[in-house]
Image (cartoon, rainbow, N blue to C red; front, side, top):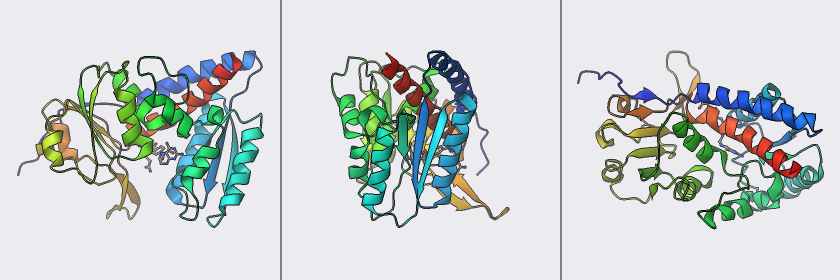
Length: 298
Ligand SMILES: Nc1nc2c(c(=O)[nH]1)N[C@@H](CN(C=O)c1ccc(C(=O)N[C@@H](CCC(=O)O)C(=O)O)cc1)CN2
């Protein structure tokens, strides 16, 4: 079959994230004039190369916008008690205005118990049950607690390209808490006003649902699961999935998304992967830290 020309417009996460970081630099400078220095803590358990890369990126981002950063690194065999001691320490540290625990955690750790131990006001990822719970409450009031970074990144990426989600049918693939379930809750709030179909590994005939979507958010971690024949012409397609493959030419590991590259000849808009939602996740984490510091300052 002849190769088709990509016609979709690009949802450029790199450029958009750079703009957000510029705005944040000014907000951080304004906080500093009031004697408030935002500080992001990161907790990494183990030496997974992907997680290490993400955490290093978060520290580099902080330096770029003037946020202080605090790093805690535990060995892969750390116990629940050892990790909880670090959480308790960051909860009390005044220099740490918000922090994240890099996920996934090793199997011996009870992840839910760790997320629950983070002080909700310092939960820079918006994954504490109280902050996730607030997402479910009064859907017309503005939320003033931290929200999960990837869902916010997706929404901000779309909004900053002038696309409205009001009334749109969004089909989300993946029911994980960091993306799928929380984006469903966020998009159905009154301010976004979308209709969401949340699909997962138990969904029958995914393609027939995808064909009805105005917007697809693919967060399955299943390489190429969104194929061109299942995409409505002109749809907005956001690729959040991360799978890793060894590139036969370079021998290096590279990211492969959930969206088949041929979708670019059918969709109206598409987010590249890498270079789409990933950089937005990082930028929105910084925004959560700044927001938390601004709110604490009154
Ligand atoms: N505590 C958390 N853990 C994890 C989260 C999270 O939001 N909070 N999300 C992911 C990892 N993640 C941030 O932590 C993240 C993933 C991807 C990117 C990114 O910029 N990706 C690049 C490509 C990177 C590559 O080549 O490997 C891109 O998309 O351009 C940033 C952050 C799971 N854990």
